[in-house]
Length: 586
Image (cartoon, rainbow, N blue to C red; front, side):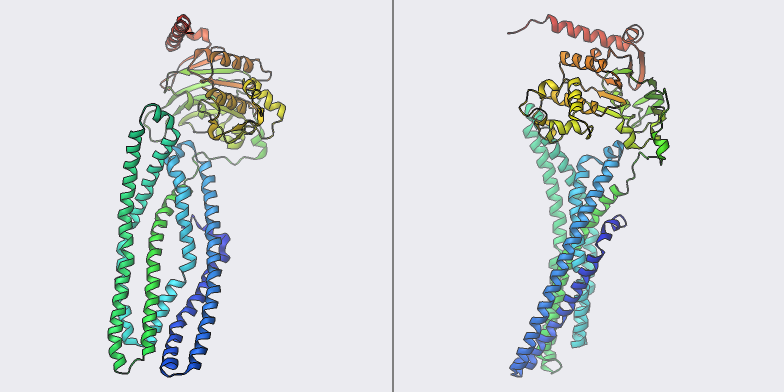
């Protein structure tokens, strides 16, 4: 609960006005059975129309004031719950944005989206019902019991006898249903994950004719979710009929014993009807409370899941730096240097990187090559602190990357990856994502270097051409070129191309690297690729093998000293020669 208080504090007025309004409504509602008894005994039975008229008008006034109070309470509950939900979702979204890649990997995208949307909605509903019923429910129950005792103490014992049974039922159902609701949310996470996979991978599924298999997988998980929902629903649904059974039994007992007391003259007809009305009020409140308990039970499960996110401190801690220290960088220092760096993913016993050391000076370029799974992408993710090394030291511009504010560090680095992420908007807005203050000339220059200007200027809208979600209206090569332009427009001190040209043909890729190398005041570059043709022009090449540096040097040096590099080179040369000799088909 402590995690929610900061998001509830702005609505103190609503948390006061709502319950107070409900208090007024409940207090007025408790008087209605009393006035009903007066109409019956003093008006209908006595034949006094004046009593009927005056008491009836008074009851209309009471109902009108109660209605106004109820509207104020409902409005307060709506403002507080919706505002609370908006603030909590914003806080969760911001917290997720600050979590490290390792923490995000542990949570998973599916459960995070479910928690931010579904679980927050459960808490919103709980806040709304809390404001509306936290005062009314107990006041009606306690007030009705007191009024019943005032009417007839002996007959009121029937109500007291029913209360322990009701409390026992609530305890048992809550004890069973709370763990089940938590499991249901986890099943919803898995169902969302399958749905997300199918929507994003629909082309692959259809290409491999796996639609029926995926349907079975989805239906299986959906059936499991439905079965769990049925089970917890049945348990929760027992609360309402059990409550009605107990309280209707109490009403029967009141009518039975009340009949004897009426015959003996100890109670009037109006008092018996008022007594039954008070029991009916208790019954209605208990039914609402039963549903409220189900709602709070679900909210309790959601609270624990949201608390896991809010209590997750960012793994990457930023040092408190003075502005002077934050802006100072060592002169003539390498742009990037690794000193005995090792890294392992959380939960993995194996080291993804082992004892990596190198230095990259300003304006220099370095290629990284290796077999799949050798740690190429993992290595460059340590530079902008997507992950922190398990051992060793990573420096940027002469300072440990941990001595930078994350925003300052990442602002000096441009990254383009193989898997390109574009956003709904235009070509220009996607490139400006790298530098919102970039001029039109800077955007065009970045696109020219990235070899993107060619296809952009063929479009009718050119840089204003629309980009659909994920860039699905562009080819893979076009998306990669826009991603490279987005990285270049930042004017970074370090440009990281993580297999960013894998979807480009050889001619376009060659033109890209020619333009990059010919740039004046070009940034230091790290180029990751599976193709030797992409890295051979780099000043030095790092060859990785199962997380270790198997070789480091120029293309010519590695051909003589590194067996892995030589093997990759000859294998790719054979493939190239085979493609050249293969006859063309017109």
